[in-house]
Image (cartoon, rainbow, N blue to C red; front, side):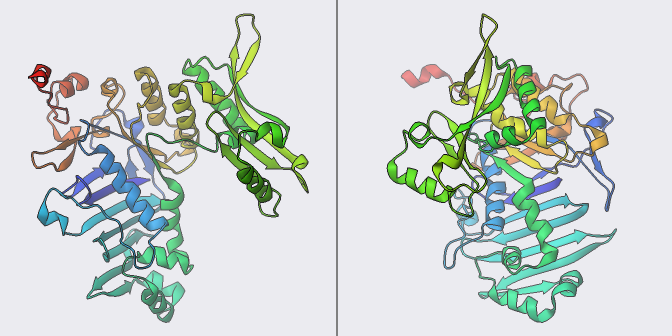
Length: 452
């Protein structure tokens, strides 16, 4: 569960910008609140919807999360720049370091992890955790005069020893996070933290494609049923969905593939390690899977996702998903998140939720985001950017689930919650936003002036 994320001096974000998922004191929609009582008790919200004009900084905020995630999970190359994009509109901020911090709960342990960086060096780094009712230091890292010093806490020392930690400290490059280096050295206590960033934090760009759709439909019956039900519920015209399986034929199934790529694909598949290859072409997506003890391409299976539509005579016709509308394909890419969120601890950060979606379908998605089966203890969350003002509905969202991103006159982005405004109980959120009460809207001038 994400509790808090803050960032400063990144792209259009100048001063510290904070997104808090902690619910405010409110009697409304208490069923939205996610509670984890194991370990240190934490309550968070399932959704944060961020509104703002184009170029207000919404995407930059998402990119800040994505940048931090990549720096942790991928790391940097020796002698390379860290790649941070600081706030360039202020000459003072341009040379200042950038700061990132995450507060999250994973496997019932509450962590605070953050770092301060410039273009070449990790200047500070810290990790604290609540294993009990008291917060304990896991490590702090300081870099001064091009020398890195790590101050480990008792728990980190306990399982590793000071000599080994000194060895890891010495091997930590100036441009590399200690957390990343320590994972490469197999330090056990840090693995849950790294795993949260690698597996449980998922950033979804507007052009995101869920490439495992065919594989999951072919292997998970529950998911296949859910996806078909969801697409019918969304009135896409799809009556069912399934995976077509047939014997693989090189000339038929790879007819549009260059010979050199075709040979490499077959070579990879028939090697000892590969079990299947996913191929995304311009007009279709499919899987070539190796049968048991496969020796030649005749021992391969071709799998392709198919959507079914009902014809006027009552029979069915199948299509490749590539010919479906952009909105339908968007729903198919988003649907796995709704399926997984019920029993998996995931934080989905989705930029432009409403891309290619009718407002009713965006609303359907959001309704399913905030609905929870409390018996399953679902800890899934969604952080969304959107322009769909129809979602600004007091019957759909709590005030603390609505956020606004706005740029000031100096071009710096600021994030504020609807809770920061005095809002009467009967106010229509959408009308208030469109009338400029909360800012974060484009100030459009008289269009006639452009012709003069």
